[in-house]
Structure formats: structure tokens, C-alpha cells
Image: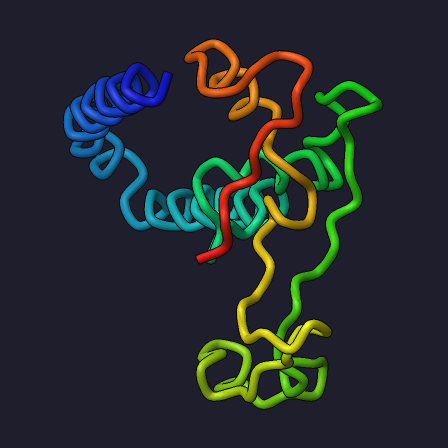
Length: 158
């Protein structure tokens, strides 16, 4: 599905670019400067939509993003009741709180990290916290790398 989705995105992007290139000169002549105000409003609406509806996926494996949607306030309603989760915050640094300076928030390497309870310095992944995502589990079962009825192996932390 990934390649089909990427191909679809490229085709839509190309089509929209052609439409914008064809329509922009006519809109500029008819709306003058107001066209840029319209573009600004559309950009603000798009930014707000992306901020509210798409969870942050930094430091997550591609297969783990399913957990982000299962725990998201909006997207979890599209999953069956038994698959919904409440996301647990990963271990982070102590200085990244509400009163932290901006450098600590955007550059976590500047923060001292918290050691997990077992004494290791490895941070748990979402797979460690919630198990293998159902999409990965079904792919593993269909490919024969996991046996039905047996627990699906959880990848080792790296």
C-alpha cells in the first residue's frame, strides 16, 4: 500500500500544481493583492488542521505510527473499541517541562536523560510499551514469519 499511496500522492501533487499554475495569473489579475490574503488564510487553516489532526511521529518507527493514531483524540474513534489505547509518554528528560527553556525543548540532546528503572540507558520504544501493531502482526502472519496462536515476537530494542 505504501507504493500505491506514494504514487497517488505524486499524481495529485502534479495535478494540483498544473491547476494552480493555470489559474494563478487570472486570479492575480482579478483579485490583485487580495489573492495573497486568501492564500494566507488557506495556509493558516492548513497549519491548524495539521497541528490538531496529525500526531507527532518523531523518533517512532514507521510501523509504530499506528499506535500514535490509536491513542490520538480524534483518530482513535476509527479503531475498534478493544484496539484503542491511551498513549503513555516515553521517558524523557527532566528539564523538558512547562518551564523549560526553548533550547531544551527543541534540542533534547542538551537535556540530561532519565535512566530507566532497570538501569539501562535505552529508551523504550512504542513496540516495547504496547506490543506489535496489528498491521505488522497481520503482515507477519500472512508472510509466515509468525505462527497463529503463538505470541508474535517483539523486535529487540536498538
